[in-house]
Length: 287
Image (cartoon, rainbow, N blue to C red; front, side, top):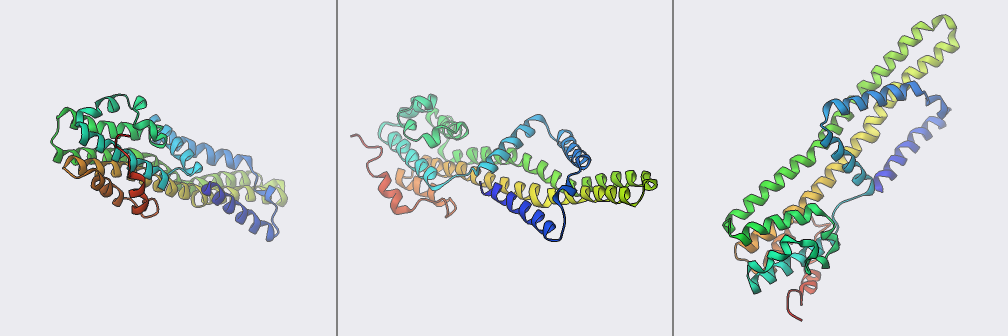
């Protein structure tokens, strides 16, 4: 939502300043310039991006517009889930987690935390981290390296749409110049029509340069930066799971493994230690 507010501020400041100087907003509405700039930008996207990256970019853009990103409540749910999983494994052995991991949507533990369960990537990451421990296919000290490799792969995947948007942001001023040059060519062909027509066509040409620069620095580059922040927040969630699982696998008590996971979080999403301790009391114990 804040991203949309920012876009509105950019537009309001641009058009407001233009109107205060005596300009008329409709003077900027030259369909030909929008077609050239929008069409070339779309062509660059298609040329530079595999279809999977285009799909990811659309999802990331929608997430940025919605203001997606982890919050304290989501991380508190994660801490409580990890604690319950660790307590169950400690009490009944790792084999007790098998049914929960194989069918997480039916798990009596996972179902308590819908903020976790509704995200398939998060569920898959936790379950895939537990499976080799349950099966005994990996030594506890090797688990952290395995999970960190997966986080790195996710980081690379999340960065692909960012690189494409950066390319568009860097290209837009140049695309605006292309639109302006085309407008000047049309202007040269219309010199015989008189000063009024020439003035209109020059204004249209300059609009192309204006739109390219405004699009790059007012919209695409800020959007790219917001997506980067969202990517960091998303990857932090996986890193939190990694630290918790690695700590428990290496022999930490459940409460300490959860504390290690908590301490790797940024302060603005990090649950308060006292609140967390209160929330964990009674969890994972038979009623």
